[in-house]
Length: 258
Length: 327
Image (cartoon, rainbow over the protein chains, first blue to last red):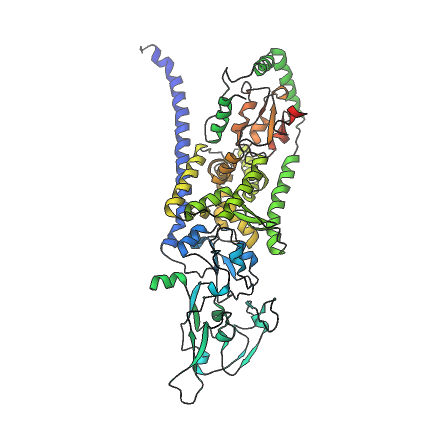
């Protein structure tokens, strides 16, 4: 290249570099955007890795990590639940976003549907199709977490409505209507001895009141949970103390402690 | 259509730059017509037509409103199915049952399969059903005819265009290959981590679930994306990122429903490219870029019909593949 041609070619060359620069900028921008989207998607891993949420999953749910993987986040289980016990997780739960859970205290799974409808609705088997009856469910296990509050242990009765008149929770009372669950708030109790956890338990033989040995003529009883308990949470919802004396340990927390 | 030209159209969907057909790809008829269009008389006629068009702009929104109705109705079916318990389409955009038949979004289903590492019959049935349905309509018809995020993004886009026309914002395009890279990255991450990574940022799932089950905090992400599309990159998600869109594009590559381009009617003014979500598919409408006198536009097309509405010459139209030969 001679000295004469160099200045003549210069502007052309300059324009080319500007185009190249533009393109390079576009590529860098694209890489940046791609990295940002991938990073944003990985943010959802944090709450899962750190087990920040200990959710009670619907009947038939696979173990937590498999469940999060297999769930397609469509909410079909939400739609079929007659008492609308199933809710979907939000962004704070990371990959639990759109994944169903049950908040037993506000609305337990009372098996109003009889045939585990959510399991039948699940298109992926995240709620395992191997389960056909409520007795086969293993969502968690009930535990008397606050024995000092338990009315049965104090030998006390219960009069009124569970969780107050504003409570939205529903329960199927077989003696009222087998097919139509009603509001718990519309069903007042008058019990000499509180046995709500046993009385409303949908699983036969899962829980019973056992007389306390060191009784001095008093009628004091301990709610005792057997291995038949499936963890549906009805006892937690129906416990009249605040907070509930009986709670559900989820499969996840049980798996970690054992 | 020559195989090589078709391969080029496919490659465009994966990020390749649009180009002119070479001599071997171009048909004789197309060459003749291009030559004819380049004559001074024809150029003068075209200039006159374009000047008249600009004087009396012809604005049609026919397909846009039909399409918006489609998106709203499809999503409304999901919403009322749950809120009124009519069980028409239960579920959300990721997976559902239409009158009891399984439907599954192919990308979501693939991701769940990769994460869970097990084949699930219902998902296969659902995916095949959905794939056949959208294969029929072709291209990424799901995007513009069903996707709830698409509608929001379209409104955001009109704000972007409004601002851009006044010079208040500027479009910062990405490379279209980004979508392919992200598709692969998300699939690999899903497989390695064993969790549905993409679903966390999937605006389609988030919007769909929010419509059906009530608003969530996750909508903040969607609002952020829309803001980004208004102020920074026009249609960023749909054009450059969405893996679901790419999957549908691949499914609909050889569809019965097509948009046909008629070279003889075209005056090459570019109204169609200005409104298109994927303007590279309309590159054939540029002077000298057509391969044949009539040609189906490339597979990345969302069949949205905006170009049909925009073209004052009627050079673009919906058609069924091969039907013109039958009749």
